[in-house]
Amino acid sequence: MPGLVVNPRARIFHGHDWVYASEIKKAFGNPQPGDVISLKDFRDRPLGSAIYNPQSQIVARRFSRRRQELDLDFFKRRLDRALSHRNTLRLSPHGFARIVWSESDGLPGVIIDQYDGTVVLQTNTLAMDQRRDLLTEAIKATLSPDSIVERNDSTIRKPEGLETRESLLHGASPNPLSVDLSGFAQTVDVLGGQKTGVYLDQWDNYRKVAALAKDRRTLDCFTNQGGFALACKAAGATEVTAIDSSEPTLEIARQNAAASNLEITWQNANVFDHLKQADTDQARYDLVILDPPSFTRRKGALKDALRGYKEIHLRALKILETGGILATFSCSHHVNHETFLGVIRDAAVDAKRQLRLVDTFSQRADHPVLATLPETEYLRGFAFETIGAW
Ligand code: SAH
Image 1 (cartoon, protein in one colour):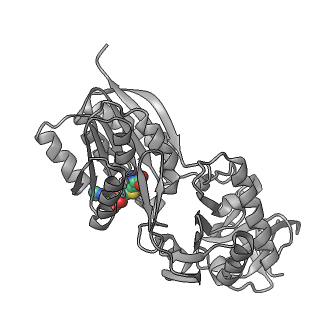
Image 2 (cartoon, protein in one colour):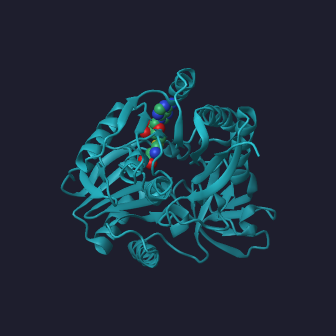
Image 3 (cartoon, protein in one colour):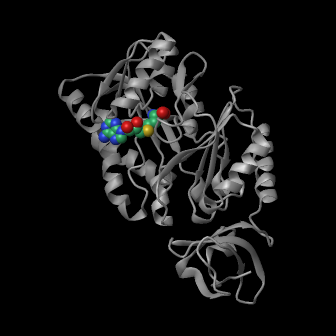
């Protein structure tokens, strides 16, 4: 097996599974893009098997501590392990879940979501993309789904040199599905919706934020298909306004609201402009939810992203009543816990508001986090109450 010798101080010696270009001492055996390679330390001791892509900054991603090929049997074993982990997680019983979350399930770049009989596959690394057929076979053998759809439209494919692609890999083209999330509907349109149709990672947080919403005038910014807005209204928020700049997702949100018999004011607007205008108009809310897209996927663009984050927090705080709640999320793993809190703190100082933490949020448990691979954690959230001066 061809491979790489890794520099002594590389992160892989601290439990990480990635090898960056700067961490390579030398290559041996002429590894080709997409190959399975073996990793070795400078004393020639084996560190495990990895997938190789010299075009990416992350040149190698280890998927096993042993010598291991990527064959059908391997993929079936990994799927079985991922499923048995999900069975230990008391997920809500609607049969919709992320069943493979990339490195956290020992399959770097592979994401698999299941919506009853429909399975959605993403292969965001070169090696896994090349083995899409094997993955499809393994999914068929393990889950016997009606349909398997490939939603390979993520921008994170670009650094791997991969084109975006959507296709039906198995079975009949699935129709949009609707699921009841305790009191409100969510439509799942795996071929039409953003991402794999819905934001599964937020599904437990709808309930948690809604628990804070009773009798509150609520503003849901970046609502997408209306998850937070609908959950809050169902939980007794007095009036709910929800904003998104994408008309197709708002249309689905409207359908979700109609199916759930919930009244929401949907606004197609840019959140930045809307919050500014709301302040000028002296609109006031008791709960503001901020769930923006990841303003950066690149570490280099972090500064600009943080400026954007700060601006929406500042504007949101200005339109919150004293005693109101700000529920805010960040879905970029470059924005760690401390950085995110720092932005909120800065905004609070500028807005002259005192904030008290009332809840914290994370990605749903079916998107597990590996302790030694911090990049597997990307979604963080806080709920703060604005308190009056002592
Ligand atoms: N809260 C949603 C997920 C939000 S995803 C949920 O739980 O399902 C981010 C959303 O922000 C997307 O729907 C995108 O269309 C929207 N968006 C991105 N930039 C925006 C902007 N400047 N103003 C309004 N909406 C924006």
